Length: 148
Image 1 (cartoon, rainbow, N blue to C red):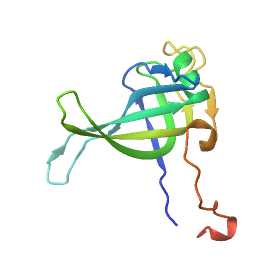
Image 2 (image 1 turned 90 degrees about the horizontal axis):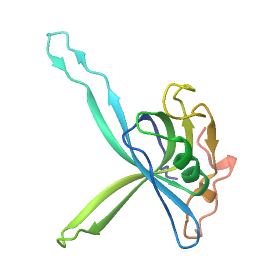
Image 3 (image 1 turned 90 degrees about the vertical axis):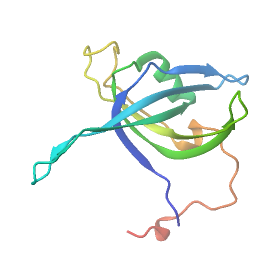
C-alpha cells in the first residue's frame, strides 16, 4: 500500500488565479507559504526562519470558493496530494513543477481580519469530485487493509 497525502498550514502568497475549462470546470492556482520558525542552538548558533512556497491547485467547487473568498495573506489549512509534472518553456528548456492538488481546504483567517468576508467557513470535497482522474483498476482499500 502507498500513501500520497500532504497537510499544509500557511499563508496565501497571492490572490488565486481562476480559469474555466471549455467544459465549465473551474481551476484555481495560487502559492501558499509555510514557515518553520528559527531558533538558537545551545552553542549560540542562530538558525533563521525557513519559508517554503507551495503551488496549490483547486478544482471545481473548491476553485469557485477560492475565487470568491481566498485572498493574499489569508491563513489556510490544505489537505491534498503531491503531483509533479514537466513542461517545455518558451525557450524549449524542460521545466519541472511540483503542485499540491487540494481536496480539502479550511479558511482560518478570522472574519473581518482580512478582505475575506466568510473566512471561517470550511469547505470540503471528496478527491473524486475535485479533480479529473483517470479511472483506476485498483480497488479502494477496505478497513481490513489498513495497518491500524
